[in-house]
Image (cartoon, rainbow, N blue to C red):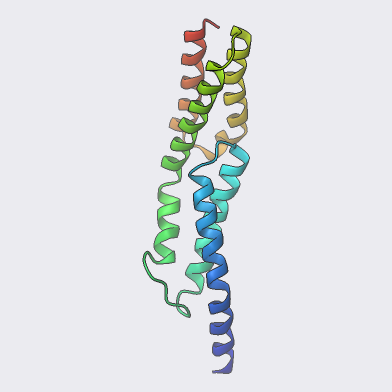
Length: 144
């Protein structure tokens, strides 16, 4: 009985901190255009939701339950990745529009593609193809 009370006290102490990490990471995932940040924070969302789910028998949560948040994070990872890719491409387009030279414009789209390539193993085939297609279309428009 005493062990359970200790676990409950620890869970109640950790839950608010883990919730803060989860919310902060979710917000960063939804805003960033940096692949390192996106993928590491997406992992943090899943890991933290898993931790929260593991203590949910000791702590009451309002709103969506941690196990459901974890399931949604896993199920929606490729959709979130697609949104991220589109955000990155939009940033590359905006940066390219500010540049005068064709070489500079091409460089923005090369940077877009090369920054995402190391993460192709984390993407569905459709998302990896989207990166390639956006890159190729942009180069055609510029004339590269």
